[in-house]
Amino acid sequence: MKIYYDEEVDAAYLQLSDEIPTGTVEVSDGVNLDRTEEGRIVGIEILDASKNFPLQSLFSCEYEPKLMTGTD
Image (cartoon, rainbow, N blue to C red):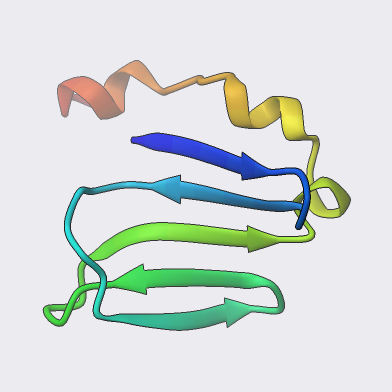
């Protein structure tokens, strides 16, 4: 995953895959999903990013170890 932030337009983009999107779906005001023709999500765009969440959270990562191992 790659994370981009454009300060000039206050937009964040989370690139989840190197696949080329063929369409975009707006899932909420200012939140768009880039998808492939098969429906796979390859990117998430967040407009007005600094107004919707702390930008520092883009650059930190936490995960649930159980999710990584597939065990309960």
